Each structure stands twice: as structure tokens, then as C-alpha cells.
Amino acid sequence: MSAFPSIKLIYFAAAGRAEAQRLAFYIGGVPFEDKRIGHAQFAAMKESLPLGQLPILEVDGEVFTQSHAIMRFAGRMGGLYPVSAPYLALKIDELLHAMGELEEKMGPAFSESDADKKKAMREELATVTIPRYAGLFEARLEKMKQIPVFQSQDVFIHEVAIYAWVKSLRAGYIDHIPTTVLDGYKLINETHEKIANHPKVKEWYTLQHNAPKLKLVYMPKPGRAEPIRLAFYIGGVEFEDERITVEELTNLKPSLPFNQLPVLEVDGEVIAQSLAILRYAGTLSGLYPVTDPVAAYRIDELFAILDDMFNYPLWGASHREKDTEKQLAMRGELSSGMVPKTLEFLEKRITANKGPYAAGANLTVADLAIYGVLLGFKSGVPGFAKTIADSYDNLQRVFKLVAEHPKVVEWNAAHNQ
Image (cartoon, rainbow, N blue to C red; front, side, top):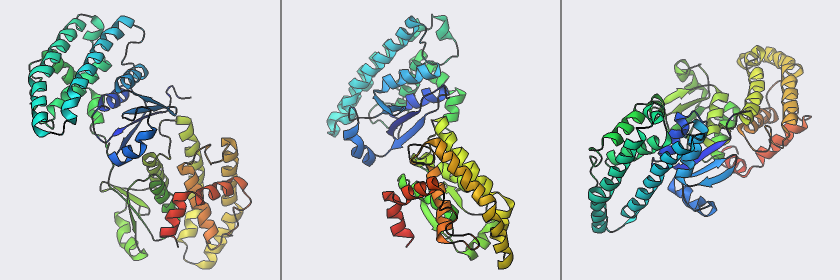
């Protein structure tokens, strides 16, 4: 079992009040889902939120609020908060609460709509409020530096919070507050540099965090791409669904990573392997539980069973064979061997996962993968009986659940008539 619960941090696609928390989880090596939403999504979900605001943190499905409380949780989970040393925790909390005080004092200058009033308020922040608090923070950091544990290269959550605060003021997007407002505060800037130069922080900023531009390329049929299309569509993930002809594939094939389709372009980079793409689509759409290792394992196990069939030499050979008689003979052999073996393995593991879905209680990309395989058989593949999977009750139930999903019905009505 994982040492960590399933964690999902939900905030806007910006740094704001969630950046320090994201970094605290990442520095501490705590697996978490960094869910970034748009303002339209927030408006739709606002009434359901405990306090009608973001960020929120889901821990094993339970929803929590308050950014500094989230910060402490991240610190506890990742070793950035001294839970066994109450006095040290008190010193950190003192700074975090003071930073919370400053955040509240800065808030009105960001919500003010009158341009002249906003300018005056921000100028007061820059000349009075921020320098006052920065001086207080500097003095408290000086006191903390007298304690050996705070002289080390270990990272603590108050340092991450200071880093995010300094970074936001240096960014230059806050009118009327100079980017140099904190330049004269030695320890504040040393703290910023300590975190900025941390390997995990540098690594974090090399990663992709906002929605990528996606293009899925396949032929004009369901095939190996349909589960991927459905995963994106169910999850509301924008993507371009490019369907090419056999002639276009012939021309494109030499340039493809593994000379085959589907491929997914992610911000222009071409990625292959259908189940790898499906797992990625599930991650973006919430249909692959990245922070729950056991749930992810159940899906990966089912994927591996399917992969064994897809990678079986005779399976590939039967799709490449041009001679109809030879192809039918190959598929006859598959129909009495590898295919029923695969279906039986899937049936057994779904039983063990205690459904109703393939990997347990919730719809996942495993269900979409199974749906895609059964859809192919049911639609008719020369050499395979359309009823080849009909005797497997679990597989039929999974197929029906996916086929009747409102988003799948909607997709099929638009694309597969």
C-alpha cells in the first residue's frame, strides 16, 4: 500500500494561492494531482465548494480548504514541517500566520475596480504595508537563523511560502508595486534564492503544467484510437481528432516513431503507443487515478493483459496479411487460442476487482479499452465471430456501461453514425 493518501490540489491555471503548496508537495516527493481549472469551470462548481473558493485539496475524496492549512498538510506529508518539534513548528507557524495577515491586507487592492483607487491602494502597499511586513519577516528570520536546524539546507514550508511571495512580486504583473520592493531585505532574498536553486524547484518549472495542445491522428474508424477519443471527450479535454486516409498514412508512416497509428501530438511532439496515450488521456481527464497506486495498478494490469494480445505475433501478422485465405486461417487460430485466453483473463480480473466497472467502483480508461476491443469484435472483423466475447458477463457489463454513458452516446451520435 502507498505511504500517501490520494491527493488532488485544485486551483486555477496560475500560481496564485496554490503555487507554494504545489512546490511543497513536489519538493517533499508527495504524489499529488495538480488539477488546474478555468474560470468557467470554477463558476460551475463554486456552489458545491465548502467555502465557495479555491484552492481546495481532496484527500482520499474528502475536500479541505484554506491555503495555509493545505501548506501544513503538504509539509507534514513531505517532511517540510517539524511535526516532532513543537517549538520549531511554532516558529514556522508564526511566520505563516503573519504572511496570511499581509495577504488579507493586500487583497482589497486586487479586487478594487476603480483605477484611481486601485493605484492609490497599491502605492500604499508598496511604500508602507509591504515594507513594514518585510521588515518584520526579516527580523523573525534572523531569530530563526540562530537555531541550528534552520541553518541547514533542509527546506521548510515557510521558506517555500516566502519564495512564492517574492516570486510573485518580482514577476512584474502587479501594477504600481515595483518589482524591486523587496530588494533590500537580505534574509528574505536569501530564502528566495535557496528555494529557487533547489533541484526539485528547478525541475518543477521544466515540467508542463497547463493544458497542452493535443492532436490525435488515426484513420476514420474507431479502432485503437476510439478509447482515447472517448477519454478526452468524457473528461472535457480539448483535442483535435484528425482522421487520415490509407494513402496519407503510407506517406506519413516513415516519419512516425514506431511507423504506426495512433499517434498523439502534444504541443507538436509526436508520441506513439495506444495504451500509453490512453493512460495519458486518462490522467488529463480524471479517468486514471495517478495518486492511487493500487487503483492505477488494477488498470495497468488490465492494460498488460490487452497488450499481451495486441503484441502476440499472430495478432499483428493477421492484420498485415494480404492473402484472405491465410488471414482467415490465422484468425481462426487466434479465435481458439489467444483471444479467448485474453478474454478469460480479463473476466477473472474484473471479478477480482469487484466492479461494476473493470477496475472497481468507478469508470476508468480500463473500461474504455475493453469497450474498444469488444466494439471491434461486435462491429465485425473478418475471421472473428461477432459473438466471440458474448459469453463473458463481466466484459458485456463493462461494454454496456460505457456504451450507455451519456458522453459516449453523445460522441457516437456525432461521429459514428
